[in-house]
Image (cartoon, rainbow, N blue to C red; front, top):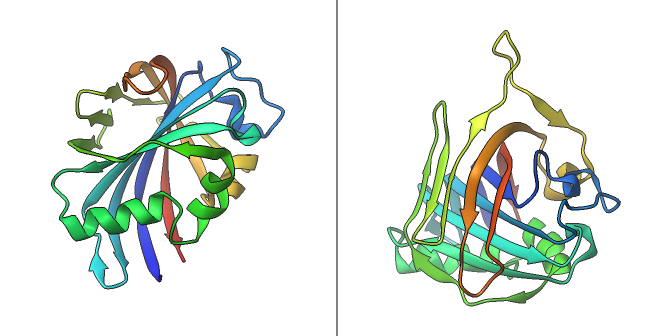
Length: 200
């Protein structure tokens, strides 16, 4: 069951900037419910001998309240350019079936998984990162900076420890949308950028 993945990720949600769930279970989502999504760009990785470098995965979930209170519905979107073996391993990792952070965290807050979808998952970086997931989702993020060009970062939030990331850069994702017909459609302004390094 050994695996390791490292790379960059984005997060989007239905709230205004920034999603209060990052700060812990007492945060109240703007609309009482919370819908969010992550885009994972796996720069290097392997799982039981399968090379996962260069693969991409999106994860979307919908919660009736704060993320930490659970009861969520989730779905994985696996990039069509990945091989069948890669998609199998990615689905097992990100779906929490191979241990590690995903089993510990999302296994506790997502109670219903919809069938994974194979589609185009495109994540672009640079000055204005973007995420496109088939016909389901589209977002462009403008990272926040001060007048001197320094990143606007948040570190030490409760969810950082839970998700095992060091911190995040805040971004404006105004106009981001997620319109999976099997989940609650939403638009939001909240976006964050991070690096991850996970294994089990």
